[in-house]
Image (cartoon, rainbow, N blue to C red; front, side, top):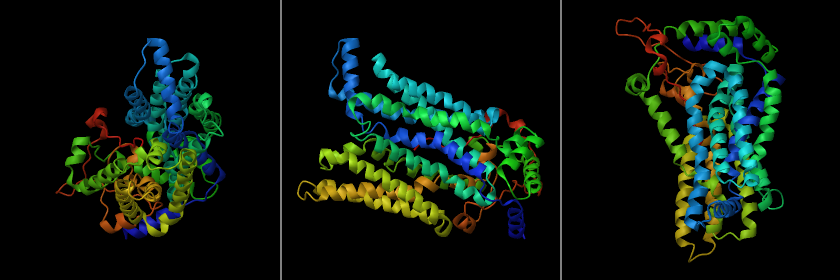
Length: 468
């Protein structure tokens, strides 16, 4: 009976892909998600030039010549501070999307890119190495915000039958961002000593396009109705994003969700971890995300050239090999888009992790035997490519999508609801299925009616994603 009601409701509010939906998906991803991928790989090509710049400026300003070890630490700080900024940005998402909305947060966060990109672009002009580090940190904060807000915004403006497709648009743009950074970092283009500040500051141009065009599109209908209570603005936004379909049914569904939210208990982090009804969902999400972060994919993106150099690839061929890995990443991401609905997320995630594990073992063996067998260097390169492909096909694209599947409405309302999915539902749940949510029941059979406001704003749990 429940399945019939869900299918009937989904049929009422299903819609077609409109130009406004497609434009918003590409604008939001082009000016936000693509910048994240770009910043992941952009520091790889000019690494030696950045170190030389640090050496020159420290000698000029402080009359002190740093050694190679200190320069390596300073460059590592330049690379890693991007992730630290991303973590801080992810922690700010909850308050920002509540105060400014989904689209409003994306538009306002472009200020961070203009500040960070300008600092990196003019760092050589002012002969200040710390401007590069500060710029990387600020752009990292923007990436931490956008990685959470863009999927939230697209998931709320899309009809249920298109959420799986639009949810993968940001992931594809991340792959494109990595590939574009690798191509522009070629020595024939911007991979020269005099051009590396321009290469780092190119993030300004996609952000400018987003800032000029995205404000013309409506805010998330769900935010307008549930958070602001503006029915007229909600209907106007839905008419922009839906050329066909039953808008009234979608509005009624959101109103029903608004009424149900008032009787659903908002959990703190401690209560979430102690709640047995969602323990396996939380464990699954934590394990998958820990596996993504510890898979070594960040080291490959940040230090691709160094990895290939140690593998014995000739110096003139390293940059082209790096571009090849970016192309394979894009192809793997596109392949995953066309196979997710047929194969399912669970096989892609598990298969991707297994393939990455085999490739990691292959790298270890090839490095040990490289001195005796020179051809092993090419095997190590193939294993690096295999790790990237395995990550992009499975864990990197769909690991984060487990969150709204296993714990309903996390990305939408910012609260954790008590959710129950059977093992079969979790295994076969496609991206466009409606959320299944139920309230926590007491032994007497009554629903917990504690208002979210009673717990205090400080106990609200916002689950967001930091950069990989």
